[in-house]
Length: 497
Ligand code: GLN
Image (cartoon, rainbow, N blue to C red; front, side, top):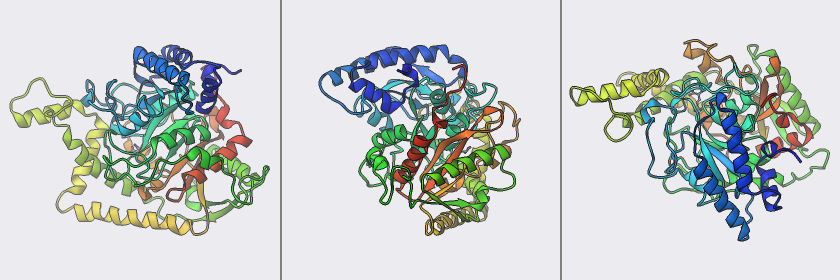
């Protein structure tokens, strides 16, 4: 039998169901691993007592005959989800000592009042989820377990690094412009951002509300399907929550396609490759790995065809207008009055606002507040914000045109493998440009997934991105699962962890 930390969510569920281990044993084992891997910087807080109590409670529920797949399986949450029993910082000094009076809906649905997963702690992330390397966290960087001198991706960097390092089988993340897919890619794990509206945003510290969406990061598509099922479903406390029941993505994922056979499970699946996703600037090692993964999908019965998303590059300026605009509005709530940091010395109310915000926010957050305030201001609103909104609509229409001829769109997640910590210096635009392949699906509100697709230069992981039409998560999960049945990239572990 594999050691406990090598087992995924589904495998641990089966082990628990068969009585092969208790949740308390699994939890204890993983807590010891987390303690031994603090140098990765993945966790912002761990509460051993809380975790062990939850594990014993889950074991008691199983002893009383409950048998759901997730009951007693450990998880941890990106520190952007508010939690009643653990601090929530959103990676910011602004919330360094903040305690929420309630749990985010996603946290509640996965935890003791829902699926019965055991929360081990909270995971590091870029401040207010702004970034793609985890270098923007006020609490230090996260190290990529495949090469600790490199970034794990971001903003859900702690989530991806912890799952890759086998500190736990799965974690939650959020994705506004790629923050589940890109860290999953850089860290060699699997992640899915569902259609906007699938998971409730209630209790997710807001970055850009028209884009923010929660999703799971795990080692396999099967595990992601199990988690996403438990996370999804209508929530009246989020006005953009889709009026849909929670989906059994796992059952949907396992349902065979019509016309499929054992050796060709993806028969009939049309995969569109946007030519703009394979530009000259794409690193050769990434392109080779992505093409090899696509060849595997072809062997499994899928057909590949070329499509076009002509406004791919425009997604960068469009996103970096809309997301900061929404952020500047959302972050106005941090004023030192209601909650969060308040400067200890100030002359008057205005001075208190200014000092609290100056001390509380980091550089990237301040930059975005300034850009966002600028593009929303009188005289510039029409020139920037409104134009960006129009282009956003056109980007979404381009996808619909593609989905006329294909079922899934595929390409790389990021143009390179993970970069070295500090390598980008203080040029934020470099990081913005590297978001080019994840931003379009975010702007369109479409589901997107990152699936391990082998390795590039210096053995760093490469991810294949799959994008589906609205509510077609199960098509993505089905294709990714078929790929993972035929290949073992997702099973490889970084050396030395
Ligand atoms: N890298 C993008 C940004 O910095 C996306 C972040 C995210 O998805 N939260 O905004």
